[in-house]
Length: 441
Image (cartoon, rainbow, N blue to C red; front, side, top):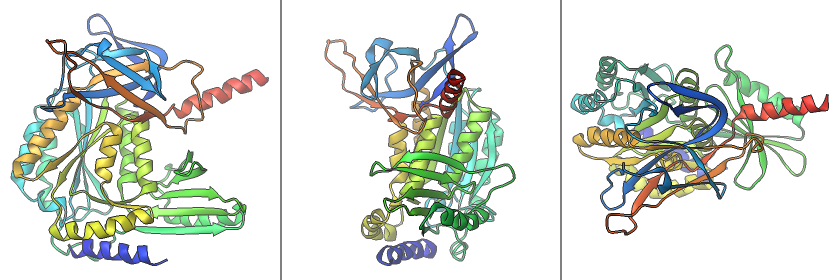
């Protein structure tokens, strides 16, 4: 706990001091028998949960005509529709992330009965569904996170991974001298781009990844509407590069969370190995997730691009943090650092759920609710026109409306959860460039 209090204190000093959804090249359609037809087109997939507003129970009796999908404010024709029980249902690729900080959610993860109950819920998954287990802030981990198991259909392997977690929770004060939970930010400024490149060479050496693993670079639009370059290093460090009006170049270097690096790994793994699965994350945390907004924006963008649904099981935080949070959180916002609430934000933006868990039995029941609602989602999709292209960096808004009547002919009061945006695939940009080159020739 000293480490956490120290972090919050340092944050105060720091503050006061200076679907696609996924658009994709192939579309899987339900066909007769067990066959799957793949056609060469681009479809934006949108997994949508519909619940009764009063009871919270998932609604499973809706039809295609009950849904209205709007992208960038324009109504789209739904060309793909599937629901729970349909043969076209995609299997889950579920990643459980346990934050084992001993003064956070980790203090509850020492209880073997909680983890055994969660393993029992996972054993009920359909055979095609897969589960991976990751821990962060764990004892003896050489890195900030550690994979206990990759995606597997073997429920026994998942149970073994969960059973190992209590021994990985650090003892009190064990990590106080480490760098875990350390938030750092630096601003570089140079008169011209050449001077900036020289400064960035040293940063590259410090944050370089393994052989063959390079940076992720993209042009984005910041909150003020300025086009900036975002570079994500292999270790998850985020650089925001701006060209100022006076011609100088500024780079903000942020590193507060391991979540960007972990997101990068999860999205890459699911895209390469599980392209036809519905990817989802369940993050077990006490809600304190120090992360700069530049980092959080990257995580959100990456999950929206890859159609990953983020969910959170949020435990009670320690009383001392509850008292400190009202003071530290506004100051954190002032300098672009989110102290708490990012898990809930990511869940809302990606169409997932954030559930409070207080009693030991809440963990298994919360996981059951998340999984049940993931499986109860409707898979919707609309086809993009050939003329719908951009540079792949613009987020397009999504909205799903549902209207249905009850037996008495009255409108049912329903709650809808779906992701709030999508990106056109980067490959589309390259394709357009090739077409232009061909025309010019």
